[in-house]
Length: 297
Image (cartoon, rainbow, N blue to C red; front, side, top):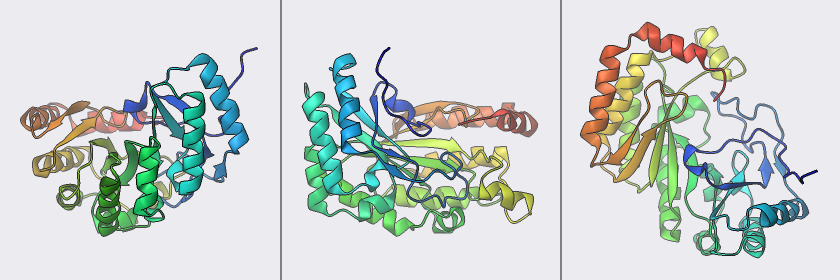
């Protein structure tokens, strides 16, 4: 029987990590308070023992010895201490050392805050690169509504710290999160925050609520009004129009009824045209039916 890697929770990875070797170092989330999220539900945060990680790396060494990149799984492995992350990186180099693979993972803004600039520089030297951060937006009102636990100023401060350390990073942006009637405000404020930074990629998703989320229950009670589908198109269009940073922007997940991708500013006109045409040709009813058909992200 073939040996199996340890995975104790749902495994989520960004689309651009499709060719990366997955390695579990945590399971679950340290926060569990984002009101829209059901990905990890009530699973308690778990740190994988180093012996377990090393066991998995031995298997990877046998079957994937030339892996160019390792993606650490879990909701936010960057919450681990700098020393723990350094120990993991050294194990990676020991077993998948040829070519010095880079290491990526999900992170919360608060995970960066807990690390000094010198610690981040060391982690970069050990291979940590292109960290994915689910900021969702840069609007303080929406960040509070969603229960993210930090504000827009924190996003700017901590991402500048990453830049000083040499660590590239990517953002998740969640269209529709601000609720009905607030999409344009959310887009403009988020663009203002993102324009102060240098994210390598902005992955645009569209809010899809599932019954176990607090925001879904708030919507049932009338405390939260879900944004209409056409308003989400307007929000994304407004965001793309006002982004002045050079970045790769893409919306190619199941949550996006119309996939799009391109580089800003070069492909701005093309992306805007695709979104405008889609909005004109697809009815609100059709878009809503598509949203309701999504059973899993």
